[in-house]
Length: 348
View (cartoon, rainbow, N blue to C red):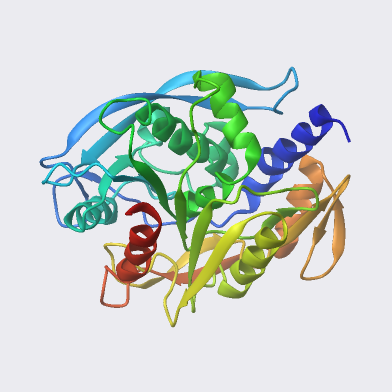
């Protein structure tokens, strides 16, 4: 297979289909001040260039347009700039958990920057339909591009030139934590953001919290960046056994992934809202594998064509509705797990 065909295959798989199957429902977040909202008090803010891309990479259909992503910094008070973690939200948009992530990291010696990929695209959160979100650029491919583009540019600044960088994403952003390890994301950032050829663009460590792990390609490979995938033991939207298989899949294809299960936790286990039963659509049973011109639904081994119609038919067969989401009493569940990982990988 030529490089052009291979690039087209990867991006057609992920842009054209994977995002339409990923679990992405969340309770919608809010912004400003209050009990459950993203807290901007005392945060330094900026808008940093990125790209919003559609189509097939390395083909005439591939197009990107420049955007600016709101970024909110929480710095370690003693001036330590050894490490910076880039934080991406899920489909619900920014809420209190993201400012809590950032403040918790800074209190433990790691700087943080929270990105708002939704407002960069004129939205506050997802539509509730991943296909609609994707058409507006609100998908995990573009979130991965945003995260990598911002950290690659920050590496070129005097403040962060010696820092190690981490990625922390939840739900849809958690899926992006795996996507940044796919080589074509790095290539897109170099080509379209204008990063010098000699500059480093990828992360030093990545963490994905309750991500969708359903999409695989028989021809994909992964960067050997350390990545931690954390699943809830009772997460019906993103089942832990599916992510365990995804981690094994990644490691057989060049990856460096480890897997952790938090027993009895639901989807969004660290949300600022208590656990409730939702009526959202789940893709937890949509584990699939792209093989050339066909996509195999692994649960049944049924084959579908890799066309919009085929993917729609697969989704109709595998998607379910209704699952628990939210915290069970401790909205900081799992913080100790990912903090320890970042300390090991980012702090000398």
